[in-house]
Length: 230
Image 1 (cartoon, rainbow, N blue to C red):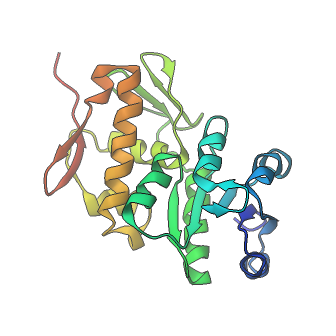
Image 2 (image 1 turned 90 degrees about the vertical axis):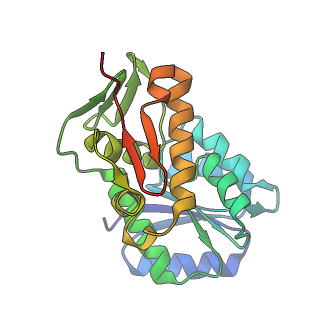
């Protein structure tokens, strides 16, 4: 998806210059910010297809920025941070980030993550609607409802639910789900899968107790969508 708009946010001008040069060299349109307070206005003005967001900014916290954006925006957010411990990664994913890349990273890896985010954003629905119990996933409209009430999902949460609903009744292995949603390079990242399954269950469960119980864990194997028989 050349020509896609990328907003990069980092307090290090050297990193921003390097990222901008590399991305523009691959046909992307790039804008940059160095402060947390600039992000929301830049998103509203530039309408990026992907946001690259550092966690440590001079006037605020990238996780707070992520939460603020998630209240109104569904664009893919890739966190770029020197903080690589699992607890911080889970905190960022819980705040609404779709991906987490630890510095230092190669530009090839960043480009691969951006391509995954753009594919997820553009979508390629084979079926217009997937239904399981009270959950209805409209792939064309990119909308999720539970008992007719809308449930806001991030792009990654939506894609994960799509994969689970498409395979309902079957156990999907962790590696299978990770490869389908995030790409083969994530096939061993059980942490990111557990985090997003937890988020999905929480959001669906807040709308309906039945919906919150649809995603079942088969320990040591993977997950399945289990619709109870009437």
